[in-house]
Image (cartoon, rainbow over all chains, first blue to last red; front, side, top):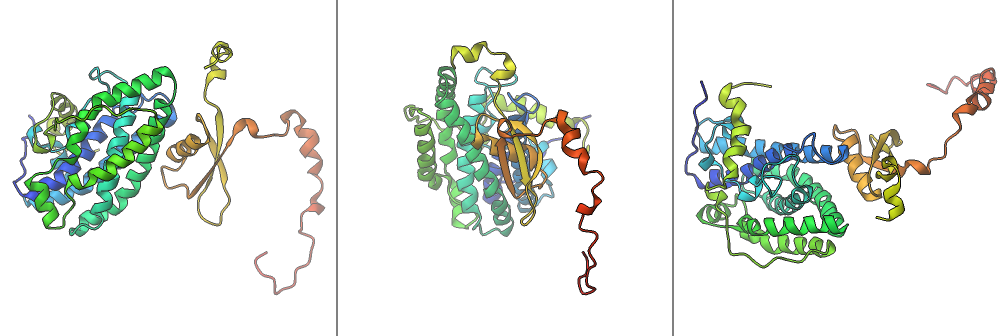
Length: 266
Length: 104
């Protein structure tokens, strides 16, 4: 027997919050894959700590989204019982830790560069969300913005260290940047949902974060000696529920326990 | 990496060891809580945060290269510390305190 899927409604505020909640949830799942596999014990803890920060942020947002959705779904149901098309995270978050697929332990340069780009984005987004018209969201943001700031600094350190390190580490960082670059566009994708959220004061349009994100990225990439790839016009559509081929595999692993043992508790 | 560095045994090739001191709250002193490996001081502080303060243990961190600590020789423990065994008069317990001084 397995647990049936749930669906959320079409309310714009619910979708707006789920985009961010799922971004945190899915990147957390990816970072969790490093647990026990990182190159050193200290960084193993750092990556796991970041995964736990992200899952904490996702929990708060999923709970709030569930309340606004009004169907009585709690954070666990929303995290584990939706189908792929009902997740609204940017595709960037679901990419495997290694460009060559789901190999353990993954590509460390790729992981740190993605963490840096995402933490920079989250830090800007949380900062804006502190003045959200929704008091719950503002409270979650006030706590999360500190977590994102630290994560940004920690990942930036690695990006500079590897980019400006040995020939091999620099080559790996360049390869990671080339691979990730086209996926960054989705972090600034707007549509009717984000316009509605901005109009009601729930949160900013994602595109409004781009100038600051770009400036902070440029500063660290320059310090790391990494040249910008050419701009890409590609905008992935994870925020609309259309995902890459990696998402189904990720969800299968993430949802397995709740599907097989409905309501199972730790 | 230099050739000399490469030919050294792996234990010599690792990142240096750092001793970590954490202050649990303002007003208290930094206490030694363990050690870790890190490539430099900046990363050592971050790693100390990850490893030793994840359960709200700290408000401030010090790190210092383990190799920079000068320690007494364990072999000289007897000579160093045993002579103090029978010198109770060095404890300030022989003074008569005025009654107005409480809680000493």
